[in-house]
Length: 261
Length: 261
Image (cartoon, rainbow over all chains, first blue to last red):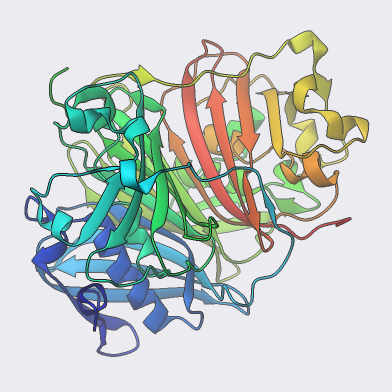
């Protein structure tokens, strides 16, 4: 079994109680990555709901989470014909760390009109810069940054906050709807472009819309921040699969506590 | 008291139970507008939490709501020093219609760096087109559509999905953080630009980030959809106040059930 699937495995105890284990392998300075926790939640919702695929998942990150066991309490709000909705308490040592809320459907069954008004960035893989491997998470996910938005990796700052990159799991796990929340939050903060690779950007809330099942291969992504206001910023992500199809949109609200300002 | 404030009034019953009344004045074909319901929720969270201002509110719309009384059940997840988080069940006739989850703070107390990477659209008010008043909601909110994106109001379609407009409440209520969720969802669907003013676009999930307290005067907004995939679309909104400051970002995931396709 792949490391990612092993590290997001869910044990069901009864109708509403599930259990998982947060490993140290997807952490940043010892703190589990918020997207990794959302991927655990995504699998718990799949176990508890009658529909298999996340359409939208929101996480409210209220307390610092830890590596170790986690108790998951499922609150099914509605099981519908085409959409099911539930909330999930992510509890460690009796304290709620994250509240997830999600609507699930079946991406193989959704039908209707398609119209696409934007394209993935064009990235030449052989010209990309890789990120330094100083965090545990870098051992698990390879990120190839487009030279167009990678000045921060050369120690230069620019007057915008944007990353364009390709990414894949090093252990060979192909991307899946369950892994998309992880990809939506594993990239260094967009503030690195503008302010350098310093500062602390804790997520308050992250919402991921899963729009299609990804094809095997590398994902291409763009993350962008347009409004950092009084220390609060959004970070918007778009993720495309190897066929060039959009598979996820993400947005988070985060605090920015820099650094050299 | 203004109509908007009257129609979002909250009665507190005890620590966790509140009550409100959904009036018919903010509805679309008899269905209460989703943003109006979120404004009711916004006021309920303010009553129940130790912080006054929404930073982020998410609504999962699971059942059709109705005009009439609503029971609100508050579930406080965490009251922190700078941020408080809670969930709210929006119940009618014993059935949950919407699940709201929100993090609140104090916008007068937030501080930190500001950097703005995008600007409001430039709209000449005197050249704007107004929307026809065939829905109850149109009697309450005036929407002035920029001619650049208002072909649909002249019966023409274009190959994009975008509205640029100015808006205000007709009763003279100045915009407030509590009203921003309403403004984030009161505009006709972006699909009207591409497919004409037909079709049904029910919201599955709406998230509004409140980024600043709006100044008095007209709001300027842009709503845009880039990805309509198998009948599911996002609609992204940006709202600026009369000083040109960004006051809210919104994103919703909605179904599109057209229409002449």
